[in-house]
Length: 251
Image 1: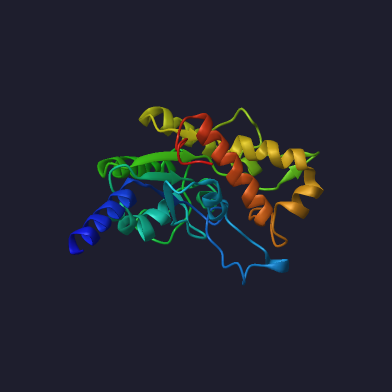
Image 2 (image 1 turned 135 degrees about the vertical axis):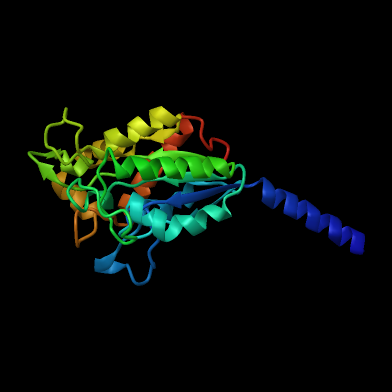
């Protein structure tokens, strides 16, 4: 009997080990929220909170996203510990940008662990590269996600700022966080899911009024209600599958 239970234990351990582990790192647009506290008029969810609904039993997800974190502050506050949990074959979803804009595109003091702001072509790229290199050192696979859009409309179109370009000229990339992340993805051959483009199309299709009513929280034009988080997670799952990433783990 002891041998039987030992074999069952080893078999179950082997199955657990075969599951793909996903770690998600980023900001409040991805984070988990208490479903009781953040309900009713205060309803709020992160898109990675809803993403497990698109996974089958072959994958697990640890949502490590934190409110108010930028690529820089998350690295110093969370990543230096979290990276030690990574194992070969793990997947790391990486989305930053919202809080990197805190200082209007300027870098902040490097030694200030709480400072959020980064310049898109300086500190922002530095920390994106660190996430990639340090994930790969542990055998994990990094995947970039460009930041989801804010609900900033002008003439029924989302502004450049809504799409994380702090200059309203769409051809000017000097303060464009999305263009910067795409540049790092090309340099380091990182798979990239363009959530900025896909969420922009969705939100513009809803329009200013309906997007506020159904997708975004009452308090601001950045955070998401359950429906918004669900729709954004679905866009992420769709593009991952199209790019043959986690295709066997996605419903």
